[in-house]
Image (cartoon, rainbow, N blue to C red; front, top):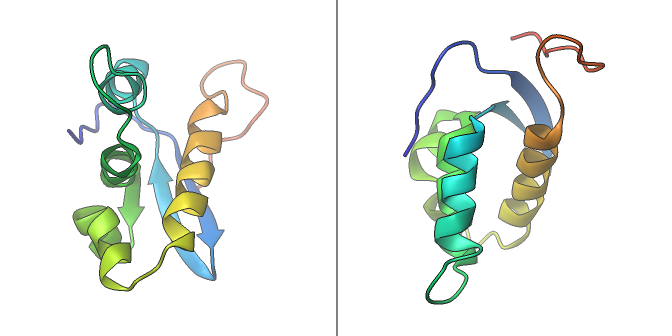
Length: 108
């Protein structure tokens, strides 16, 4: 589900003393993700699949997190970091980017 089209906004965040590089996604990608896992038309919310897809779609570094997604944290029995990382990603995606933005793009 990962797709990087054009110039994605990036930001570096620190969660539990680890630096993560995030990239933005487009509105359609994020809307489809929430429709599938958070507000499904039929069935139940699936927070784990949402978290996994969001991490894989938005985290670019560290590479092992970008590739493994939620499994990376499951393998370390880390319950705290994925939730905090998702909050950081959601806050980043909600920031305005582009012309007229009051937020500067983070340098990479």
